[in-house]
Image (cartoon, rainbow over the protein chains, first blue to last red):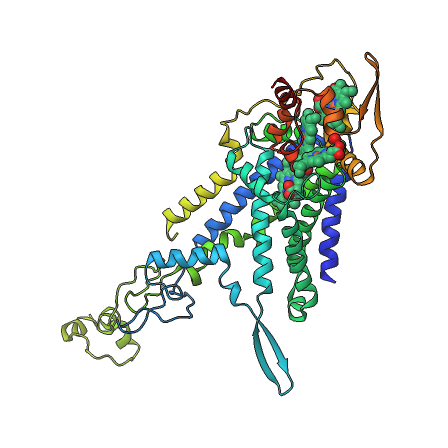
Length: 343
Length: 136
Ligand code: HEM
């Protein structure tokens, strides 16, 4: 049921933008005010979140390893699984971020009569996650053509490569298919894998639906509802936004505002949601710490500066009170002090 | 705060990347395109101009399929208030380029702006190419 609420929320956002943008004058709100607000909240929220994470203590060296740590010379060291130097950590992080290496190990658990628990390799999640993330990245980079004038050559090349097969007119982008197929798989996984479905919440479905709606409105306005989608006018608007001299064209059709509004909703939602794994992946201590606990003692940098306090020093400090309270002490009070006391 | 310089450095890189469009042209950008009006003096297109602006590629796609797959080579009639009734063969070179005879000043002016590079001209000839062939 939880996905129904998420779907409802996305549909509500779409309706707001759809009917809102039809009100004369509101194009300025949806085309200029909301995008500016969204980018400010996105950047501010992102920085705040990272700052918050960076402030939390890391009391122990808690990297996860699944390989032999550096040890004696004749024991082979697994440099990627148990990185010992910063370079090795960077290599491990790069593979994690660029190829989702730990997701590649994702397994499927099944319980059989017995009861017997089995694990089997399941690369689907990794494959479709990779397709989705790279398609998304390429689409976002390609979209820069709507904001940059002149369009930088690398974006032109990327556009060319992405429409290499020249299918249809306007040509189909491969990443459009990749984005939608990837998202549909990730959604189907939540829906049809029972354990995953059980633990999926509103906040798991919402970003999926939001991204699906963004992708579908984008593809629809490119391939189907072309009317009122004058890319030259839209680009004039995009360029106006980034040069702080916003212009709105009255003729752009509502589906564009729906697309844009959903993107703004995504930007605003981003820093406060699980989508922050974009920044979080760089900060995860289980990946970004060195596995050198045999050589170097990890000291929590937040440890307060506590001086050693031996029992002897403790007794020196409190001897009078201890004697007074009848607690046995190792060294009795000095006699003259005792003699002086009754006076 | 742990690894302050790394965190701040990473955040700075991220913010710079996200704001690329803002500093890319240092708040200046080239002007929007102004496609040249047809040199032959025509004042209407084959379809309403708003439709042409957004959907001319759809129209070309429909025409291409109709001509090549269904052999519907009917003539296109345009009633121009100044030039009277104009007739064209249905097609990219036959119709569009007859009026918009300067591809570089017309089609390309927009396409460069929005970074669209239709591959049509690897087979179809632009009026300029035809003229240079004929001059040989
Ligand atoms: C999260 C960011 C975004 C995603 C994932 C996204 C996704 C898409 C997709 C999948 C398409 C289909 C065609 C293509 O791939 O180029 C598209 C088209 C489009 N998007 Fe976006 N979009 C995003 C942000 C934006 C923004 C900020 C704008 C505002 C200017 C925008 C305006 C457009 C336009 C005008 C089209 C039609 C392009 C064409 O007809 O060639 N998009 N979008």
